[in-house]
Amino acid sequence: MESKPLKVYFIGNDAQFARTVADRLREVGGTIDIATTPSFESGLAAVTGNAFHIVLFELAAANAAGLFQITALAVKAPNMPVIVFGSTSG
Image 1 (tube, rainbow, N blue to C red):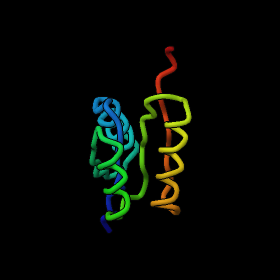
Image 2 (image 1 turned 60 degrees about the horizontal axis):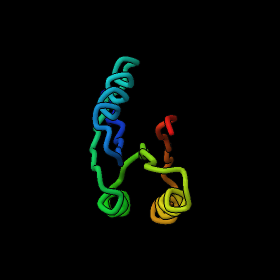
Image 3 (image 1 turned 120 degrees about the vertical axis):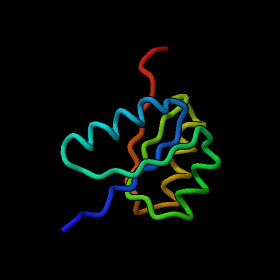
Image 4 (image 1 turned 90 degrees about the vertical axis):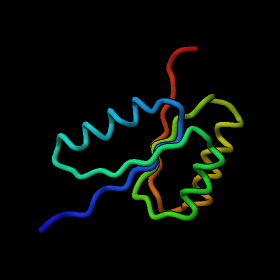
């Protein structure tokens, strides 16, 4: 029996990171469909209208605007897991 692919949505500018994550998931036996967008606004619209299993969200800045974006994702897609990551450099 063939399993359904994990549908991952990546919001952020680091498309290479998204490809790396997808490759690592495939290595452990998963089938992955990944969609990407660099724009938070288009990403927010996409998670509202599509059935993704998980969102990978690249946080541009750890500030009030970033907290607002995380909150907006949670409001638009309350049952969707969101993994937030960002740069550790300052």
